[in-house]
Length: 341
Image 1 (tube, rainbow, N blue to C red):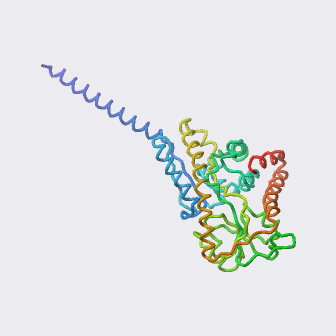
Image 2 (tube, rainbow, N blue to C red):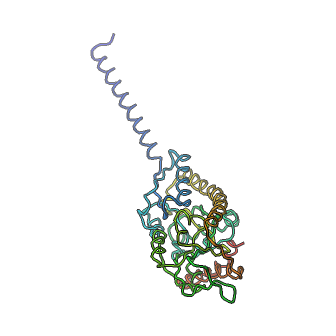
Image 3 (cartoon, rainbow, N blue to C red):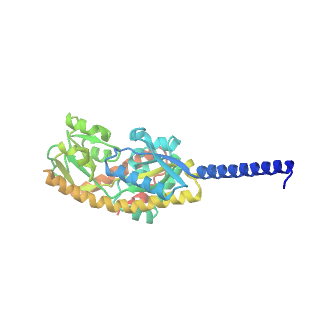
């Protein structure tokens, strides 16, 4: 039997024990919650395009395998305008973006190497090309270049009217109003086209109102955008590659635990391989569908020269930008060796 004082002491000890247990439990919950690093991501294209689907699929995969470590929130489409997204990542306004390298090639002119690549992403990672690009991102733009996640599609020029070829066997775009884009603007101007910079969201209206007569686009996605309603002619051979990659604010990357860094990097590298295989197969199927729908494909007589101009024009632009910025241009040849077959 306990005395009254002893009973009171027992009750106090029990309350103290329960309080400590609750505190420990709350602390464990808080620690578990704090252990999950929450990141935000933006993307430049509508949800129905395969590139956005691949981006979101990778987010879902990372959130699944990284439960308790990393959680990525995808911001709504157009919450940050497409050409502003890389700067937003650099400044830490958002943590991640999956976006074309060409969209911020003014900040990192060497990005042209990815956009114009004929080598596979697997080759570029194995030969050190991706690491070189990552080093440049970290040095120049406060970013970590995690990987080139949507390669494998090429580009093709599409026109409303049949193309004309000059006596050298090259397309003659004199007087042709062509929709421009940071990826292929230099190439179009080298072929004497009149270029007009229009975001992808405004191209349908521009075609409908005859503000432009044509546009390059990837070998996948034209049908989903419904541009094939106006663009009935395709020029071949195809050129360049889709250059969508994952970029991350460098300060945020450095703040991650080694476990979180490895999880994120490994997932991106695997997606490079998987997405390349998917996109190369889908492009062939879309070409057949376009042909079945009445699109005419025209072969450039001087195909080799056409492809050379495509690559040369981009690397010349890279060199000019580096020269203007008073940066070393020696890297240009190295990049070309790593990203061109």
